[in-house]
Length: 317
Image 1 (cartoon, rainbow, N blue to C red):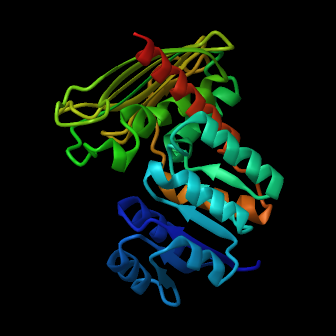
Image 2: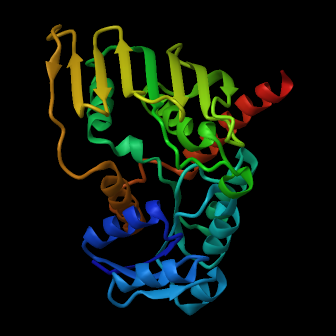
């Protein structure tokens, strides 16, 4: 199996998580890292033997050919970085929210298709082991037809950027986008979406509170709640079908489910690699042609466009 040369752009907290995942994969070499903060790039490179450190993207892309460029920059920078990486001939994994709007995401989708390169958003929650089990339950018709979906990602996150010019996004694109994608993944394509946005923390320049109501083409109804300013908040995913149910509690690390064959609540322990490791391994395998990408550029563009629809509703009020 040929070794994959990987370059990572953006050496912040998420970039560090990605680097560790790449390091743990066999057949992968972290060839280069890049960050506008030269000391951050140097510090990251020093942890991975042979990795070169860059402060600017252009010299990095000219230095050698990379099989994969992993983009972990702010949302505001993603479009230009992904475009440059695709034009250099690399396959690209891009952290969410996968650019600032649906139009930009669609442009990158079409560019990747034209360059015959693989592009994927890092919708890591698809790879959360309990979510994978829930997906199997649905695919095997053990829950029946999905009818209701509820996902809440909330807590008090004081590291949320208060400057839109830096972060580029608020809670909708940064956090709720994962729940939107989970609804599509588990319940099918979205027919309609309506939402409300609020900024509870007056020190923020972006929305920190989001409530969404989604309807799938199948008829399933979903409720998404996200808040960055709710101490003691919960992180939970619930899927209810005509024959069974599945409840995933991220905070407690538990999964409960029941089916038509066994209509009593059962607990299940889903271990193994975490969602980041699984997402990155899937992308590496997709680049090698060993399996299809579970999250695609089309998924990223669709989620971005759905967020656009909510912002348009908010602007029209």
